[in-house]
Amino acid sequence: MTVGGKTKRLVLACCLLVLAAGALRATLLRGGYVYQGALSLFYLAIYFVWMQSVRQRFLQRDMRRILVCVAALMIFWDVLRLVKYEFTASEGALARQLWYGYYIPIVLLPLLMFLAALYIGKTDGADVSRRWKVLYIPAAVVVLGIVTNDVHQLAFRFQPGFADWSRRYLHGPLYYAAAGFSSLCVLGTLIVVFQRCSKRRFLRYLWLPLLMTAAAIAYYGSYAAHLFGAKPLMQRMYELPEFTCLALIAFWEGLVFTHMIPSNIGHESFFRASSLRAGLTDKTYSVVLRAPAGVCPTREQTRAAEALAPVLLDDGGTLLKSRPVRGGHFYWTEDISELNRLNRELADVGDALAEEHAMLDAAAKLEESRARTAEQNRLYDQIAGELQPQLDALSELLEHLPEEEADFRRAMMTAGVLNAYVKRRSNLLLLANQEPVLSTDELAVSISESLEYVGLLGIPCHAEIEPGIALPSELALLIHALLEAALEAALPGVGSVLATLHADGNELRFYLELASPSAPLPADWGRDETARLRVRLQTEWSDESECITLRAERGGAAECAL
Image (cartoon, rainbow, N blue to C red; front, side, top):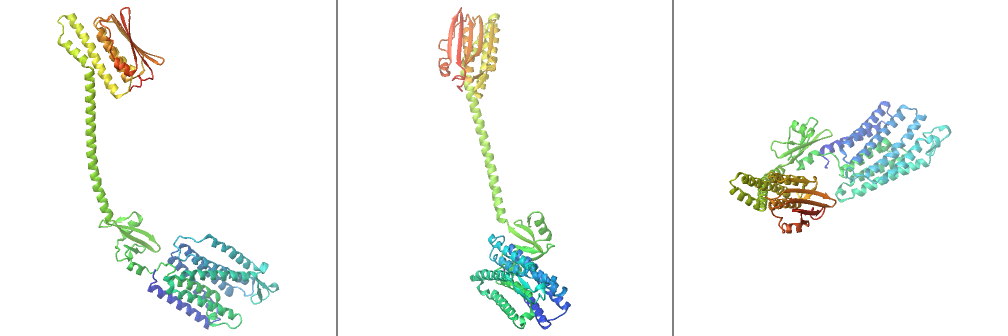
C-alpha cells in the first residue's frame, strides 16, 4: 500500500528527534543521572512506539510476531545498560552479569531479523521451512555459554579474582562463535532482502535499504577504529546498542517504504482509488472513512449487521455486512439486485411448476379413475359373462313360477340355490382379482351357503372343509364351480350331498358325493381348465351315488397358477 504524506511527515519528525538526541549526547558526553535516564527513557519510548506500530501496521502475522520480539529485546538491552551504568558498582559481580546479558540481544537480534526476512513476500498464514528453526539451537548454546562465563571463561578470560575485569580481559572461542553467528545472520538477512528487492517493481526503491546498510557499515567501521584511537563523531552521538537498535528499525521501515513489506497504512488513498462499496467506523459505529462508491449507514444498521445478521438497506437491493477490526469496525455492502431478480424468476418458475404439477396431478388422478373404472367394467363383464347361465336360469325360473304351492316352494328353493351361487361367486371373483391366494375359510362359507339352500329342499347336506389352507385363487374358483355344476345337474332328484376338502401330505383333495342325482356331471366339464391347472378330476359311481374327486399337488402348478 502507498505510504501517505502523513506517515512520511511522522517518519521525518522521528528522524529529527533521533538526530537531536544524538547531537545532545555528542555535546554533553558526560551527563549526570538525570541526563542518562532521560536519554534511556527517550530510546525506550522509541522502542515501545515501534513495537506498537509493528502490531498495528505489519500484515504478515508470523513476521509481526518476530518483530515484536525484536522490539522487546531492544527494550531489554536498553534497560540492562541503564541498570549497569547508573545503578550498580562498575567493578562488581552484578555489573559483570549484566554485561554478559548484553549478548542475549546481540546474538538473538540478528537471528530474529533473519527469520523475519524469510517471510518477505509470503502471504499471511504462509510458513517458512521448519529447518530454519534449527538455528535456535546454536544461538541458545552461545548465549548460555556467555552468561555462564564466570564458570568456564570460554568467552572472556580475566585476571585472577576478576581484577579490573572491565578493561583487562581476552576474548575466548565462545565470543568469536557469537560474533561469527551474528555476522552470518546479518549476512543472510542482507542476501534475502536484496535478492527479493532486485525484482523489477522494487528497483527504484533499492537505494533505501542500501543507504541503511551503508550507514551501518560506516558506524561499525568507526567502532572498530575507536578500539585503536579516539572516539569518532558517530560513536559520540550513539552508543553501539542504541545505534544497532535504531539501524534495525530504520532498515525495516525502509523495506516498508520500498513496498516489499505490505503495511496497514494509507487507507485514505486506498479508499479514494478503490471501487469497493466499503468503509471504516470508529468504536461508536460512526463512519470515519468510506470509498466513493460506498454507502453511509446509520450506527444502528452497522451495529445490527455485526451483532445479528446482514442488514437489508432501504432500496432492497443492497446487503450491509460488518466485522470488528482493531480500533473500530469495517463494513461493506453487496449488491443483491441480480440475486433478487433471479429469486423472482425462480419464484415465477416455481409457480409455473406448481401449476403444471397440479395439472399433471389432476390428469394422473383422472387417468387413475379411468383405469379403475375400466378395471371395474372388465371385472363386472367377467362376472356377468361367467354367471350368465345361472342368471338366465334364475330369470327363466322366476318368469314361469308354478301355481301349486308345493311346486312354488320348490321353485323358490331352487332359485335360492342359484342366487346363493351368484352372490358367492361374485364375491370370490372380486377377491381373486385382488389376491392370488384365497383361504379355504372363504371357500367354506360359499360352499356352506349353497348347501344350506339345497337343504331347504329337504335334501340332507354336509360340508367338511379343512380350515386355514391357502389355495390359488383359480383353484378355489374351480372347486366352487365344480360344486355348482354338480348340484345343478343333480337337482331336483338328488337324495343327499356330501362335500369335503382336505390336505393329505403334498396332495389337496376335494371330494363330492351325490346320492341318486337327477343327472351326472357332464363328462367334458372343465376339461380345459383342469388341464391348464394340471389337476386331476375323476368321477365314479357307487350304489347309485356319484362320487367326484378333484386332486391337486400342494406347491405345484395348481397352487402357483397366479
